[in-house]
Length: 202
Image 1 (cartoon, rainbow, N blue to C red):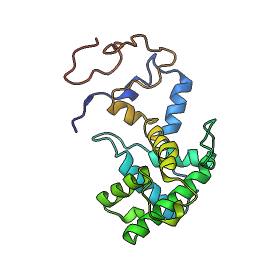
Image 2 (image 1 turned 90 degrees about the vertical axis):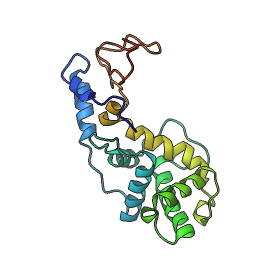
Image 3 (image 1 turned 60 degrees about the vertical axis):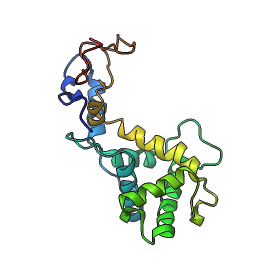
């Protein structure tokens, strides 16, 4: 897929009025986040493969450390302030969910999820989304709820917390203290990215 913002790098504004010292510090720490050793090697491999299928790395841009950002969230076990009554707290949900995904891969293909082909992995994920699973590991753990309440929201929010993902979609990131002014559709502030081929919204 063509890069819609090929010349845009949100980090170019890091020393401008768009970002204050606190914003710079938070983003620098986020980019430098390493992967904590909180899961078994099997769970870690499953999580990495899962993230590869849900949010592939942006083309021609620095990689997004989605695995590390999500692992830190799992380690912190910080609640959202709400959760579905049929799902356990965040860290426990991910531990059970990763084991269930591997069990599903074994039930269907006789090997771990991390070793499945792209097509096999994607078909398995569609089965989880549709609650059409086979493994007994899902018996007391609803797959569709795990998919919609934990798997997708947590992975996607970790991915789009990174500046490389912001640049790929032309997002200016946090604007503190400058702030955004032109908020209507097809309007942009002068310092925001312009989509290639789109000359509106100036």
